[in-house]
Structure formats: structure tokens, C-alpha cells
Image (cartoon, rainbow, N blue to C red; front, side, top):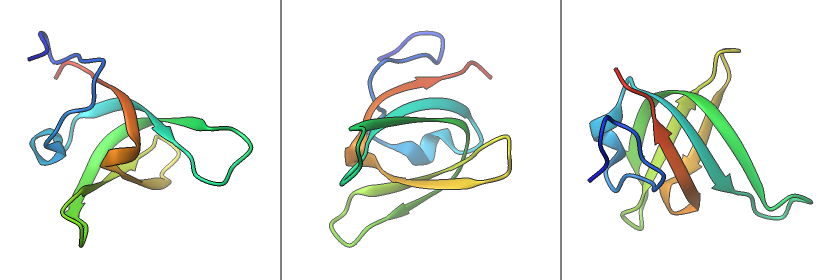
Length: 80
């Protein structure tokens, strides 16, 4: 378990982190670059048909990114 709310591995249950600021690196599909990064607040978590979670990140520009949890390769949870 990570200490001080920081981890370099993706959490298994994103619902526990609603409202937390995060930085995540995630896998892209069908793009020129294999990875991207999002920094923002976890604004929502839904469960897909296959049982995996889809994490919504609200960025400082006000845009929202929905990322499938299995595509999240690394995550940093900022302290509260």
C-alpha cells in the first residue's frame, strides 16, 4: 500500500479517490504515440459492461477525459 497518498501504480478501486487530484499515464489506441498523460481531479467512476472501471478526470481547463482503468499504466495521487 502506498504511503502519503502517493503511488506509482494504478489503484484498483478508483471510487475511493473521487475528488482527489491525480496525475495518470495511460495507453492510447490507434494513435501515433502509445501513451498520454492527464492531470486533474477524479470526477467520476463508472463500471463498464466487462466489470472494469472507467475513470473521468476533470482537467484545469475544464475538459473531461474518460479513461478505462485497464489502460492506466501509472498514477500519482496527490496528498489531500
